[in-house]
Image 1 (cartoon, rainbow, N blue to C red):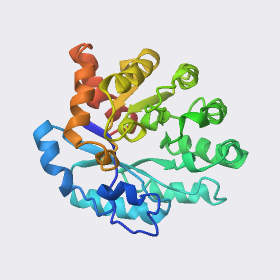
Image 2: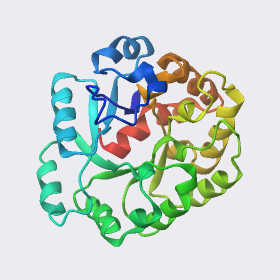
Image 3: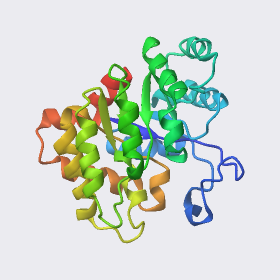
Image 4: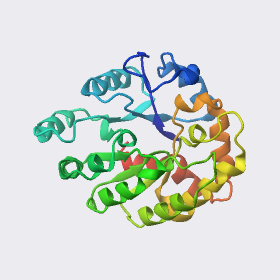
Length: 273
């Protein structure tokens, strides 16, 4: 089994200012050793470490961790996709086998940035180097994401955290429609991850999460969905095991072969782990 989405960091209050005071549970360092026991308990054999800081220094940080920890099977790093020297940078990072793809925090950007021809061209160049791209956005940015994705028919893409639907309000109609459209692009996969953060952290109900899962699985199918935890961010709501149990319980309706796809094989194929 593979966890397709985890983060590691040495907490810095300035750099990591997105971690607000109400997220006190994660205002500290998180390293692979903090996950080891949980992974052993749940028989998860490895993870994909995803950038949490937008700098190339983040790539070096994650590569160092990967050298020291066999559990890190792949890395989704960061690179300036608008950089005029982008081919040189991609050529450099291609030397490191653990780096499988890149991500930019699009949830912090506006429509103009997402559809900027320079940015679109940068994502297109990833394909020439066989790199993947993680789409991180909020549900209310999906129109911009659709405009971006329409220009990237050959690029392997994965949607992080189901595009962060409004789990708390359960106002899912517009999000559902956009997910349906997005899933028609067969080069796009989706991570079932991060939903606890979008819910009422302490008082969410299982049905609220299941309603979101229904939309994702109905549109992407088991062949394009991968399990991810979004650890340690998700622990502001519940322990890791609670999320794993929730996804496992939902997946009981699928065949054994489909469960294997969701919990490892899809991530392994997408990221070439």
